[in-house]
Length: 238
Image 1 (cartoon, rainbow, N blue to C red):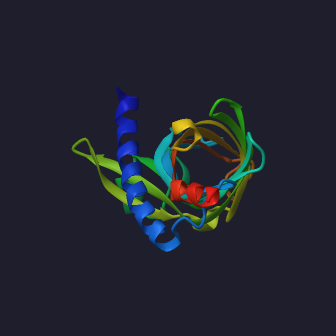
Image 2: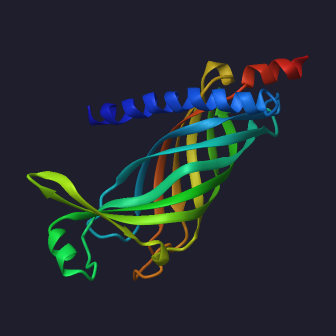
Image 3: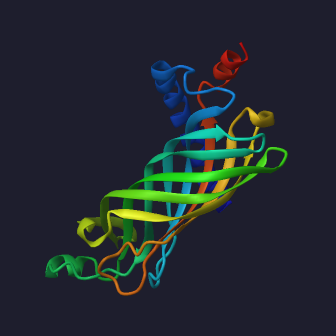
């Protein structure tokens, strides 16, 4: 039941973004970015996030949204890349630390901290169809961080209605990089949406102040929607 509650908002929000994105991109680009050798589209979904070596922390759930390109190299071999424009890393339920303000420290004693690091991420992967329209994928992902905040939370009357946002950008590296590995399945005999699950293993120690390596971890559960694919294929056939 919990998984169902998580997946339903993903599906509805993704289709909402997908319709709006297809209209906007189709108006700007039409079918110019699709052919029998190239597929362009938008993708997004749910992120399950963590950071290594963060004691007592829990998984942070968030969303991602971006665009992609699939380059067909051979019948079963593809190069997948793009930009995940809305892409967050982080972790939930950290123990509050001192904010060097006695009043704030008192307010958040017994509360928790959600760490949210916002990135532009660029995956570059090889995709290989292992059977039918099921593919395995693997490669690298590079990230550029543009803002970072710790969200201090505490409850009054059993609600998390007390929140303080602390800018932590100076404490974290601007660049992240790591390995990605996943599986996906393309619907409609290879001409429709792609459902995929991908794991990101960060290899950069992103926290410049913490002792020990703190590396980003993320599980992406995504839907990829081709934009102008049918028109592009029809144009290529003609």
